Length: 231
Image 1 (cartoon, helix red, strand yellow):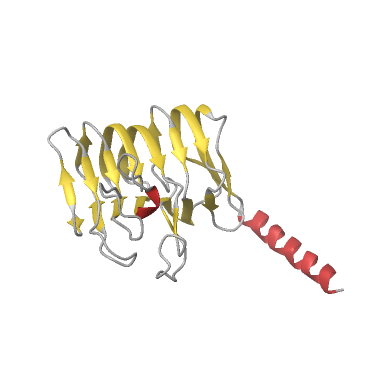
Image 2 (tube, helix red, strand yellow):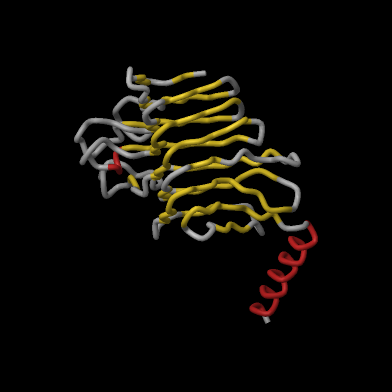
């Protein structure tokens, strides 16, 4: 399902999912994949533009996958501008929903680390805007489909984990090359959950969901610490 302002599919197998230009609340381009097969023989760019303007968002793209197979031969890029144009004028979101997708794979993955705020446009007064990689756990025994990257991964912006899952450790991403984490990466997880980024080379990123009793103990610990401060 495609909705939005702009979507370009090139004969080389490269796709740009990008909204129209304008203020940060302008249109988004969204591809939602519930099933079937999407096969890009070049790149998949989610939120990209080819304009040099610096005071408005020029490209907004969102790719949501909850089923089927997505294969990208080269890179998935999220919020990365064209060439030397400023990345903070692009917004991208790549969202994996649940564990029903059959496969999500690519040669590389880059999530941009730029922030769009009032420093970019004095007329903008909203919250800072950043690109995002999100995994929405669906609560089942197999609650999330992992992304398999054969090459390098660069993570910036927001890495968001939502939803619920039985206690255990789940792989959300594998990488066959090197992993680079931005110093400004904002990892957002449910309370008590933890994340392990692996060894940094030919490894995987996993999320651990604790037993409910562990969450209760963590909550009690927080209450005791609060009582000590009040005393």
